[in-house]
Length: 410
Image 1 (cartoon, one colour):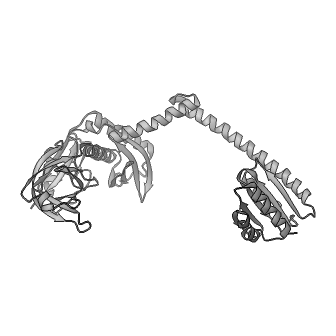
Image 2 (tube, helix red, strand yellow):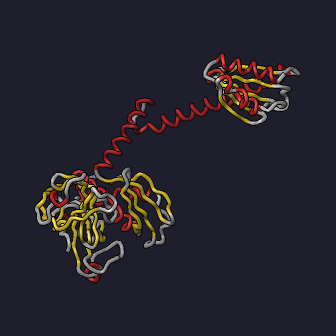
Image 3 (cartoon, rainbow, N blue to C red):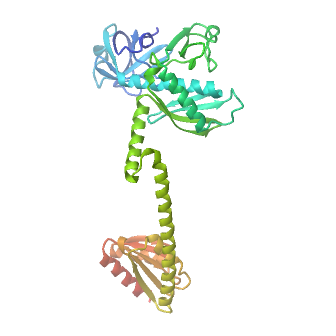
């Protein structure tokens, strides 16, 4: 028993009828069934391409798979009687999700074109293909032209332009089926065959000089122009090969729209057009760097002076309390640690915006002090023997905590 693959006869057919041959239960979910038909317009998952989805008699098809030339359509019956819903021998109506099918065809055919161009230009063999939700990837191995040692972005952009030229030329996309390897190998293939019979070869363009020609079981548009566009995002080394990230079809256009929206927003912010956007961006970055450097130096000077002032104030006294509004928590920690070795009892440095008190001491165990006393006043925190912090939700509680610790450390 074989399922006739109507999607090969007419890739644009969106609805059809078929006869139910068999219904199988799903072991992983008793409410689901697998329906076998005499023919189908549903493409099953395979060759790196995801399956078609849609409906059979208005019930959603959630997965389509193939095994030994039989195609299985998965449907959830939600408790309905399978034999009554799909009687064996009955005729059913099939309807595919066309938007999903066309999206898959655009992306898959785009991968074909780009892979073929990489092979033609650089001898790059596609050794891996993945259709992700956010982008497509192909793993290119530079094995047929050893003079090329790497695949860089300039090379990718050259391939991208040539691939899009194939789209603009609206080259024909033709599927041919061969009974034997010997006949199939007469085609200008970019990749060695892995099967010996019933071989499907997809060729884009004239067979004398195609944009691509390779064995493939997927669905493709009738002409390359339907792909719309191809856009490469980046390339990076991957396991001795080069992984190219790209997109094709409507998704490429939508991704470009988002990126252009970002450019437009940046241009408005910087009062710049796209041609001089990078100059304005770099100029702002330089000013920002100068401001950060100046702030860093000012902060260091403030901390230096504050360290000296606190050191003089500490003297041989017991504890000291200081409050800070402008310094960050990290600044305060740096300040306290810079005073290590000169704190006779306990130093309390308060970060007012967060109601956090930092404890520093050469004599008392700060972490133990916070652990044993902060919770009593509604605080929380921790630390080690020389440094700890306690955080409070009310200022009164913070002050009460400090008073209690001062009494304990006298």
